[in-house]
Length: 439
Picture 1 (cartoon, one colour):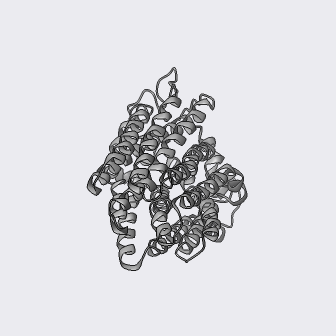
Picture 2 (cartoon, rainbow, N blue to C red; picture 1 turned 135 degrees about the vertical axis):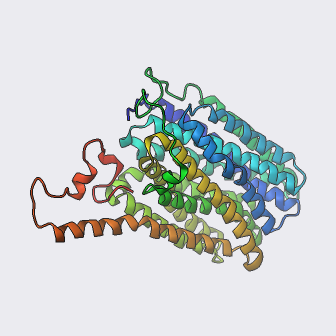
Picture 3 (cartoon, rainbow, N blue to C red; picture 1 turned 180 degrees about the vertical axis):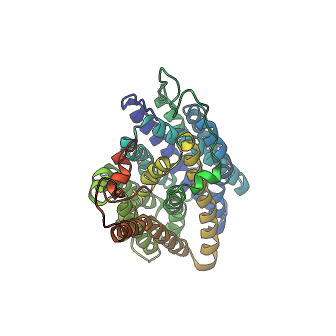
């Protein structure tokens, strides 16, 4: 596959645009929860509204991925911005819970459109050796938005005591304006090579790979599950920390600071992710981060003071910073070249499935066992993802041991070593770790 990478300017502009888009969504999500509470919602209703955010994207992801595989990526970005801005603004003007749920779904569809276009752009315009780094830098944009958005929402909502409905509406309208700002960084963001779109063979037509064929490819399903678990944790933290704050007498401004601490730690993690990969390897890093995130997420259920909750959320944010960029590069590298956008869309479908099921389950658990129960559920989900992430190491141990026992001969015609298998003709060392197999 020929990659023509047009410098780094496009990636910087994409990070800036994603920061505005994600900042708008990160402002809107807690503001939607506060506005729903002001309109009479309980913890279960907040969970349902948070789930509807992911419902429309659940059905739209694969068609959008198919379209992007056989066309341009950039047109999805402004479409996503328009839908995000509309969802934020109209949520601020809604005066009933069903209306808020509907506009929350529009916001989610816009976010999905933007992310599919942006992730496909990174996959298409990055050389294989640069994908881990570029996906890490790309997700810094999301973390910057998650850093600023909750603080801004908390300050706006806390501005006037006793007027939660009005101040949350103002926060949603401001979020719509922030989303619109991302359009300013989208000019000439997609590189049009002189020899046409980047494909495996410019002369041959693109092959339509079946969805189940993509899912059966080793590394795709595990990457999707890990991404689902990590995003579900981030999503429920954003949606339910305001509810926890209300019950523990923590003000909206402090809740916004706590959410932003989590996001700041995620930014720090992604800035040092490349040296961590060199030190630990991709598989070990993924497994350790999911294990730590599971234990820390369950600890949120403990009745901690605000300062201790801030320390815990900072550590949790650092652990959660690994899963998204590495699951993106894992899925891209495992999928067939002509179905990379569809594979990324399947990953996003898994994310949205988690965003539908996890908040709904969290709402039921919160209604039955209190608001601490959803965080215990997320801890179990992340521990399961850690077990899945470590499976390649167990397979590698078995693969290395068996040839050593069965093949005493050592010569040019003997079985290739683990290193030669990975770095044969047409492969690149950056796609795997020196001690690990392909995901």
